[in-house]
Image 1 (cartoon, rainbow, N blue to C red):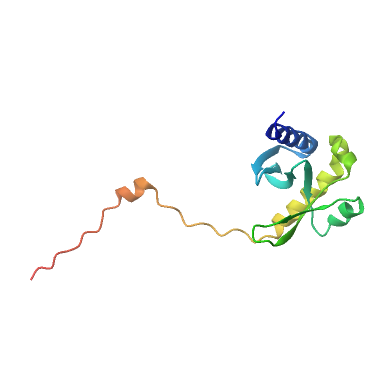
Image 2: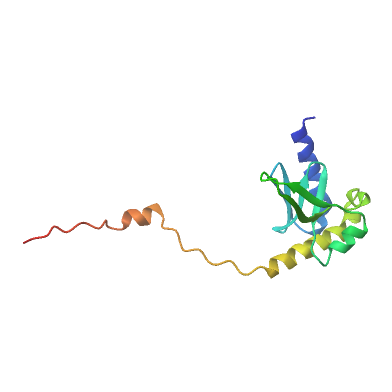
Length: 144
């Protein structure tokens, strides 16, 4: 079995673990996967590790359970620690054992979403047909 097939199977298993929370969607990103529950981004998969979203309210439980934060070194050499943490090994064994952790991740993601200012509406983009329908300005010749 190739590495890509293994990663896809692991992503499917992680989606199954989170499924009791709602509709789960896995999206390939950054060489791994991102997991959404009801279109809320709640987890990342990097290699063979599932990392769930945390915040100041949920992080202590993940730390106490022996979880690890997702860390990486960027192309610029800067070290970054993200607010995604691993779960206890037994949580990876069944959806029932994952639920307390998954609920905390969803709650963290919803709190993060609620704390963001609303997005500014974008100016409508002119479509090609609307642009074509607008008469071109013509330079007036000066008459003298």
